[in-house]
Length: 111
Image (cartoon, rainbow, N blue to C red):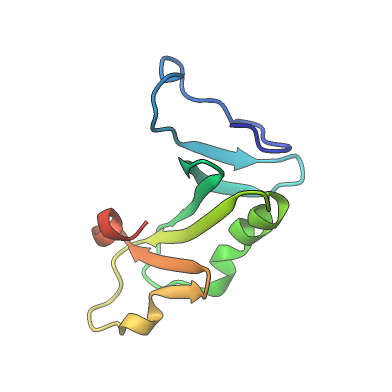
């Protein structure tokens, strides 16, 4: 997988033929996304990991910028964060219509 301007977009040594790959993205302008995961032909999952319980819409800014730059891909986006305080309502499970907020305890079923 090649993304324009990426400083590290190669599989880990010894994993070149593994069908499941995970990358990170960083360019010279400082755009950085923690995880870039191919999920099919022309499909990507972009994910940010945040060590916080409360999430904010600005946490998705980098993913939105990258998604605009690679518009030929169908992109799914999520922010993985610490478990929220008890009683948090379901409507607080997204940062925007396109970005899911996923507590780390629920990562297997959402991203």
